[in-house]
Image (cartoon, rainbow, N blue to C red; front, side, top):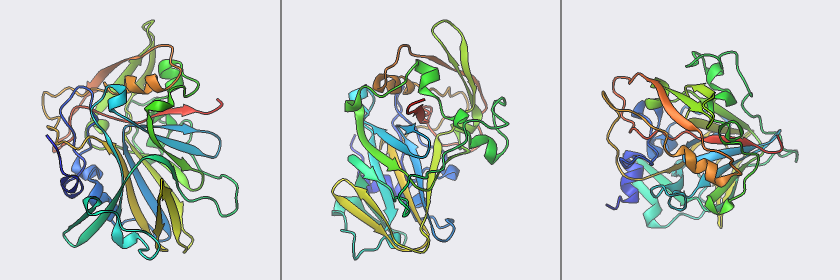
Length: 316
């Protein structure tokens, strides 16, 4: 079944019921790309980019790259990497309007969308040096199954480490990467997830049977960049996107575009997508991932296929 791009942006990023698809979060957690891009809680002079779907973070001391993966080449359903922005945030004097298939109007909002292919560059430090602020490596709540504070969630402990999970130290199969987003300035944070992510406790086990991770995992990362009252520019392939000075929201999403059944009572979430990450790096083993506990929340609309990101430290 083909899902129209307009339906996707109007009603949100949904997923196909599949053992290896990546589901969205509950409506309350901001999974709807069109609505998220149009939201206005962003503080003044700050660009906020919400990140969802099939990707992993390669990071160093003061920079990071978001690698958007190509689902079909990894044996997964088609994922569509999109950048979505409310057109009111865009300086349309310097930004070419996308073709009609990538423009959606409704409820007084017009959103513009770009396909994510190749290299994408977020704003750089005007001073020249890379100065991205990354999430802390640990928090005081890492030993808890589920963190109780925002500081507890904002820990790299809540994003699976490919070195711990599959013995990886480097990216070796870049043909599986559809696009890469360079972050060198601003702040990258890990947020509390919604839906399945908040109610699921995962356990990773090595081939020898050793537990290598246990706890809740987040599927919500957020990149913010100060504007200092000036215009910011994003380059996406051949397209240049210029934001007006002040606050702006955008969404990067790489999930299937087919509606999913919610993971309600009796549903068992899975993370079957995770082995795809190990195919991109120099993995020496695949972890066994099991659901240690699951407490569904009332009103959850996310499907059973939970799709958090992964991470790999460059040079670590």
